[in-house]
Structures are given as structure tokens and as C-alpha cells.
Amino acid sequence: MTQKKRSYLFIISFLYFFLVFYVVFLLDYRLKEDFYGSINMIPFYKCYKFIFNYENSTISNKVSFLKEFFGNIILLFPFAKALEIVLQKKITLKKKCFYIFIASFSIEFSQYIFNLGIMEVDDIILNFSGGVLGAYLLNSYNESIKV
Image (cartoon, rainbow, N blue to C red; front, side):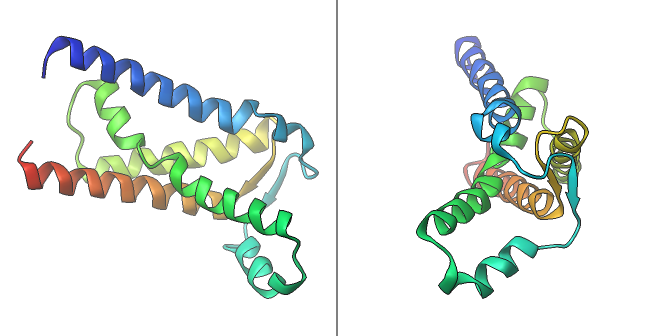
């Protein structure tokens, strides 16, 4: 890989990390949360409520739920690759999973500590799932093209 390409990837990775920070901590919707500093430890409680109250939900609530659900999956999808680029070394899939979990837990715990939202086990599970899916697909792609 050329130095110029490595530099671009490094900058893109830092922009990704900044974007994650911005989305998690600085977006305006954070100021509208009703349950600052609370914890939801019931797995998939929001999903359960959404499915069983689907008929009574407004379009706005449905869109909001879907954005949050898929947003949590997508948030850490590129995390493992960005981490490899910034650290400039290959990381095993097992270590990637560990780092993804730590990042997801840290995001949620920080939201709780700094009163920026709700610490939810759903978000940890969805962030982790998206990050692991991204890491797995990246590893599969790299193996298929022998990178």
C-alpha cells in the first residue's frame, strides 16, 4: 500500500471516529431525551414494545424506531477496519470482537455517566452485532482476495 493511500485511509478512519463521537454525544436529539441517566437492562424491550404496539404506533414512531435499530447496527460496522488502519497492524477476529464490545459498552456507559441518554443493553447488543458483522465480512473479503 502506498504512503499516500495509507494517509487517506488514516484520515478517513479518524473522520469515522469523530463521526461516531458526534452522533453519540453531540447531535441535537441528545438534548431531547426524557430519561437522562437511566438504564434499560431488559434485552430487546424496545423491539418487543414496537412489535406488539405496531398497529397503535404512528409513522413517526415507526421511522424513529427503525432509524435507531439500524443506526445502532451500522454505527460500529466499520470500527474494526478503522482501528486496524489507525493502529497500523492486523488484529485477530477475536481481538476485534473484544475491542468492538469495549467500544459499544463504553459508548453506552458514557451516555449514562454524562446524562446524555439511556444506557441500553439493546444498543450494546446491536452495536456489537454490527461491528462483528463488519469485522467478519472484512475478514472474509480479505481472505477471498488474499490481501
